[in-house]
Amino acid sequence: MRRAMTVVLWALGALLLSTLAAVIFLATADDDFYRWAMQKAIEGKIGNEIRVDGSFSFDVGLEPTLIVTDVSIENPPWANKKQMARADRVEIQIVLKELFSGTIQIPRLVVEHLDLYLETSADGENNWEVAGASSEEDATAAQEDLMYPLFEFVSLKDIAVTYVDRQSGQVTEILLDFLQTKQQSSDASIEIQGEGSFNRQPFKITGRFGAIEEALSAAAPYPLELTLQSSGLVIDLKGTVENLPEAEGFDTSLVLRIPSISQALETLNIEVPLAGIGEASARLRGNLGSLAVEDIVIEVIGPSGQELHAQGRLADLMQGQGLGLEFTGNLGPEAF
Image (tube, rainbow, N blue to C red; front, top):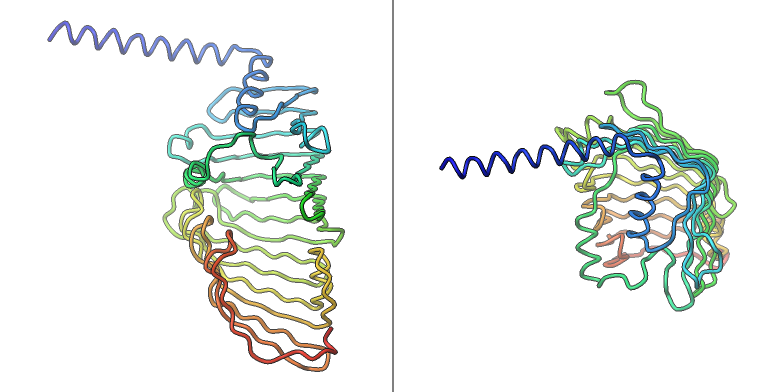
């Protein structure tokens, strides 16, 4: 018994000394070590080379902060551009203690002057996927284990996202002038606002979310409210989420108002000269990976007063499967 106790005490002592040594090393390591560690960690996840040509700093603590400037991620050889992403400045802070509970809490995220280039080759290969990625079953399992971050302060400035699909020839461009969150106190709701353009059509985002403490405690459904406006198009999303960190239990209402259907479709690179106005409403329920769109109601009114109504549901929004709509009414040729 005494021998066993001695072995246990030696083991605990060795563990404590190892932990202390690791803490001392992390506290005294220079930025070059953290630069190397970050590069290896990210390259192992995405399979592409990452470069930090500017400054690099890492503050160790219970809420460590990483700040890098002039950082870029290389594209695979087949892509048309050398870099998949490049940012002038990235600052991110994370709460370590929440990681043990399976939650990623990010008190601060700042990204300035980011150019993100996404491309699908003619063979259907995506530049954001790791070459030789795992099977579909492994990808599904990884999706189920995915943790979604909780953000407090977010500041995004001059963000440009370009997506090129070589199979269809379609190009999508999103320019975000700014997006910022604001919280008056730790227990107050979070306000969000942003402006930019989607395929050269300006848009504006406003919204309000619950405090981070509400999401962490999960004592009650987490409230969210978001409005998107673009060229007269207005989309309102309002509701709650049972478990925000795991993106489970969505129960939200969606209302969409379109003053010009043809103009809205043109934003999506769809050329259908439908001269009418429209309104739609629906309810989003379920988990983020398998959202069901229920109680869909669509009304389209043509220029001469003809009406087209539709109602139904979409079983899986993310996969675009299980769509069932019933139509009544009609639109005459003068609506096109």
